[in-house]
Length: 126
Image (cartoon, rainbow, N blue to C red; front, side):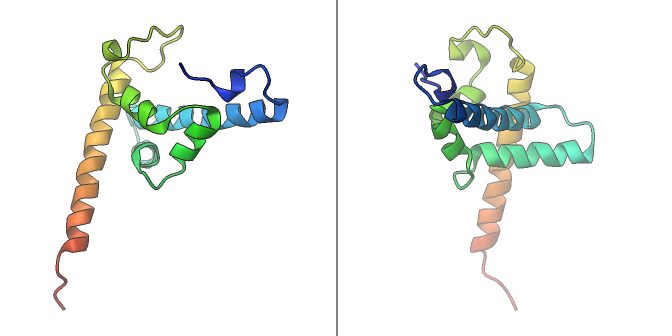
């Protein structure tokens, strides 16, 4: 069970407000990463959001911990097929189509990172 800071009965109102803001940032990143891009700007936003969600150097893990959850568990849940999560959301904006697009974005992100890693290790000819 997740003990979200924003729903904790003893949480200070300012703490609750900050947790909700961080949760909104995370939700927007998920929205951007899983949206079918129509423009080059939306495509760039999807790439940046995917990087933010999955890059270990981003602030995502810190934001997740500040709202009372675990980043790695969230990442796994985002990439899992809907049925595999065992959750029945009240309002499911993150349907299977969005999950599929996010998984595709994630695979492309992994490939891009691997190419960058190989380029960084390649000997430079001067």
